[in-house]
Image (cartoon, rainbow, N blue to C red; front, side):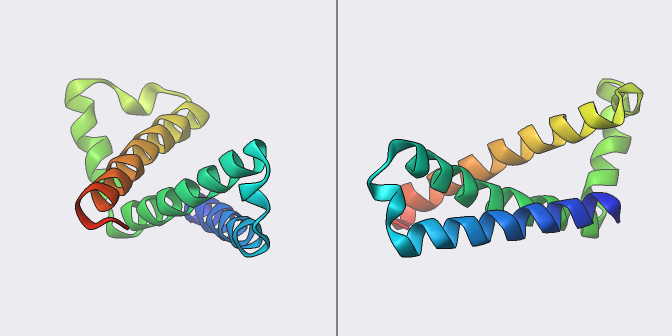
Length: 105
């Protein structure tokens, strides 16, 4: 539940920051704010994916299957979180590309 709580807080913070940048239009006038807005948008998607993975037990299943490939549990907890976040970012990026390419969203 700690990990899910952290993901929820990060997702809400990213959503609020993205909303502020989008509503004020500040991201259009500054490259750094534009990149921050894009990062926040992706982080919201990642947070949703991570929370779904935690609540459905998919993450536990991936961890148990990953033992056959490499010993994921032997990594330190922070490294496990980083690896999981990187995979979630990759999945979110692919989903976003598919939505933009096929549906123009």
